[in-house]
Amino acid sequence: MTPQRLGFFTRLVRTDPAQDAATVYRHALEQVELAERLGYDTAWVAQHHLDPAEGGLPSPLVFLAHAAARFPRIRLGTAIVTLALEDPIKLAEDAAVLDVLSGGRLELGVGAGGSRHAFELFEFGAADRQQVYADKLATVVAALRGAPLVGDRSLNPAAGQLSSRIWQATFSAAGAARAGRAGDGLLLSKSQPRDPAAPEATLWEIQNELVDAYLDALPTGVEPRIGASRGVFVADDADAARTLAEQGALRFLEQLGHNGGPDIANTVAEVLRDIYVGTPGAVAAQLAADSALRHATDFIVQVHPVDPGHEATLRSIELIATEVAPQLGWHAEERIHA
Image (cartoon, rainbow, N blue to C red):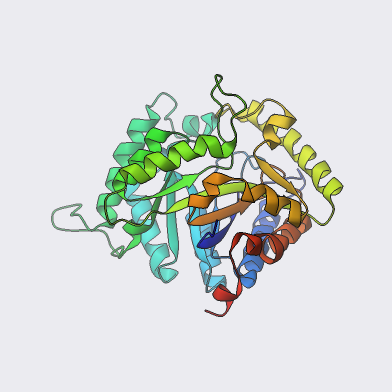
């Protein structure tokens, strides 16, 4: 496994009810700042609505515009914008503006999913999510590629090459094939719903099917882009890491019960079965066994669902860049001095 790029992902989760949004955003920006300094290639953020314990950022492009002004090198990605809830032309416009401001550093990740309450908020509760997603994605792509929108008028500002930096997130082989046929990037999740017929399947066994479907559908001559997100929490002490992981898993289970979503886990053990937790050497060995990562062009780490707090997250970001990722073939010096 030699990932071309190392990414850091955050949901901007509020782990303490006393935290306000300003604190959550400041911490996230400090994490991105450290990631840039350590040579990470990309910083990714998620979009969530209403519930700060699920994720604290309803407007990811606004946040990334601020990050672009502060951090001159690191690429900036959405993982994901819930496309079914967006006006596709407005999204294309906002993404084009951000891409211009950032010097072409935007990676635009989109997906069909989202919590039940988010779809109710935007009055899409009864909608066919997949069909709405497909229709809006076609509109976004056409706009970014300069298709006429009204008369002979097209998107302003022009989106340049942004349409070649679209990523699609999915849990299914059919969704992976759709991304491949479009020549888009494929975003793999840190966890997967299990088939009741194969409850003990590993994360990579499930996702290798998605990777195969994506590569089979990819047009000839199009370079694959596969972003594999993984829950990774690295600490100096293994016991402390495990304790924090179990505490985070309990919070995550509470959120699943409150918000709904994919049937991913029902116990602490099921939450943590796809998460890599421990000291640098132990985590590197665990990741080396993850065969889906061998196909990844982008290895994307996140501390969710552990969410151990700001200082522990900063330390994990550092240990991944300095001790874990180099064992997997990624080296910061190539980025920092580029």
